[in-house]
Length: 598
Image (spheres, one colour):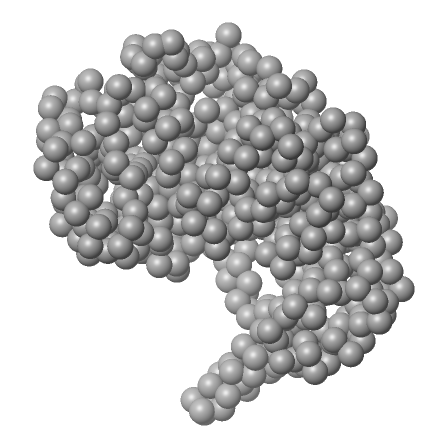
């Protein structure tokens, strides 16, 4: 993928791409093109943009909008949004949607009727639940006998820990209608469905895990509108959850998430595939049009093309707003990266792991070189199978060492808690101290925040680390939140943090990164950085909500110096650039949306 943006000198263009021999050969064909080694970018005269586009047809990501580069007129987004008719939405008193939410309800309603599905990608904290309920009210009002027409008028699928929140802070808060939560044994779940259908209960609320188990039963019924909350849970089309949701017989579908992309655009395609396969086409058609595959160090590497076309396609069925586009005050989020020294022993362990990882990478590179060679094509099937197996084994080994290095950055004690034979044979003996630079810093940092009268949210990707953090903070009353807890236990932990003044710290794995409203906390600490940019974003927005009591909220990212953490941070910057290009609104589009919320 070629990233193109305007140079500080408006007559020049900056061109960036990951190292690629073919790209370099092509760009050298452009007159006077030269490479800036300090900035790691190619620079060409703006007048050669058409040659550039011809050489790299469809492989551009225009960091500076194309119409600016070509000195064309500004797109008229205002006219596009004026096409949306604004219909009245009745919610239970005293609740009334903000003007931007009213527009969102009508936008989604129109697109659902037009295309059979729509996507609400509003940033976390802007009230996607209210807008979803509003859409259901419009469908019931404007489509003849909607609720009687379907066995299940509205099937809401969410994370297990959010089912009660959807019932209490969604259906019951904004409507006078009834709902049922699907839970319990298989027999009980089936009985709940049958009873709800018999009594014409409009809202059935289940979670992704239960849907997977019940899908053969559910697919016998017709659903009016399928609502998938935290829809990034089904963006991987290879997962069981994606395949189960795809089997639901539905008239319409609504997908809601503030994080539709984690590392590539296929996440959005996967939602379109469930909503209406004819909209973009099947997976084979999608890959042919938008994906270039190259055999890289870790097997098949995907590069994306025709992203501008794909972005315009998404624009037809998706709505994305951040606080920049709405007429309400969101707390200002102040994010700070804190670089922390590892202990001497942590550095020793990390050095050992880095060397082992490097050896595995070198071995993998040799295998990939064979796969890329001409002789590979003429190898016997059994030889190819053996080489592919070696590649898979080495790939797994590299990823294993990557995980170990991340754990080393967090705390050496994680290795002692591991169930891996390799860890106990090769790493535990290297541990001379349980001390962790991050954990030592965290204890002092949290105590300082608590003493100043505040509550704190702490995230780590490892359940074992959550346990270690809770032990380290045992002098304070804390609650933990992990994926292994039941829905009731999760609900209890959230309520204790929100309602009990004695509970000062909420310590969670990524299981708590989605859907929770923790607006009573002013401070959030990311003990580690996840490789999935959407998870990091989701974490941060737990304390940044429309109804927050603070003007500013603070997020601290802990990064171990000279560790794998720093590589993760850099890699995530590249992923976010793709997300911003496809999803975030440019200035002109943002201003048009602002007009609708004033």
